[in-house]
Amino acid sequence: MSADHSVVAERLDNGVLLITLDSPRTRNALSGAMAAELSRLLSVADLDDATRVVVLTGAPPAFCSGADLSRGSSVFAPASDGFSACPLDPTPSRIRKPVIAAVNGHAIGIGLTITLHCDLRVMALDAKYGVVQVRRGAMPDAFSHWTLPRLVGLGAASDILLTGRIFDGHEALRVGLATRAVPADEVLRVALELADDIAVNTSPVSVALTKRLLWRSFESDRRTVGDAETEGHRHLFARPDAREGVDAFLESRRPNWTSSIPADWPDDLTT
Image (cartoon, helix red, strand yellow):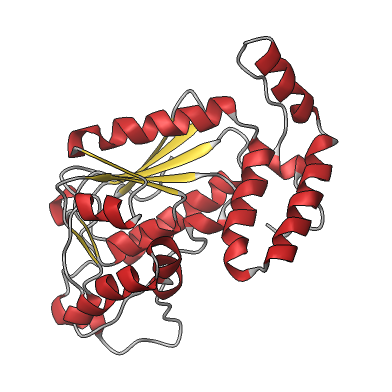
């Protein structure tokens, strides 16, 4: 499914799209070509009804060691006019499918900051994590000054971003960065189990609207969020999945969801 062999995509039978950063020689360091291909796959997944959940992982032993430093110090050469501090467009936070980061090994710099845009993070307990850019004469990227404080609070974010220090999965779990932290060889299994639960047991449009409201809540006040919840309920109650979910629960069976994000997305919400 992927045009770049350093990024491999596989759609599993349950509607989970597994995307793997697959450049183990460089510990999956994120090149420009890899970022472009990952962005393309996320864009396709957003509109693909066959994809219910995206799981993003790395070929062992690392998740992503950060920026590709194969060009040496020239990687931080003066930026061109088209430069962006975030190499992904869209980010995982901007697509309407849940994205789970299966952080199965070290995630450094951009390798960690891109996971901050995922909805859930399953992280390896003994892996090394850090946003180290201030130790390289650069600064944190990929909107991390916006995402990280909202995930772990200003104090913990300041500690991570201002020191550029390395920490492990135990600390990631303690400060709230990791949704779950398990041994490295269990990370992908746990992430896929979470993905399967979402893919089977939740309505596609219900999850998509919930995700969109969660991310927009960072920039919204209480009344705006409440109004959006009310409009979301009105929209969902008029669709078959609202009846199917209740019927499946009462009949103790697996639900048969029929909603489609492209077809059933509210007209007044942009993608």
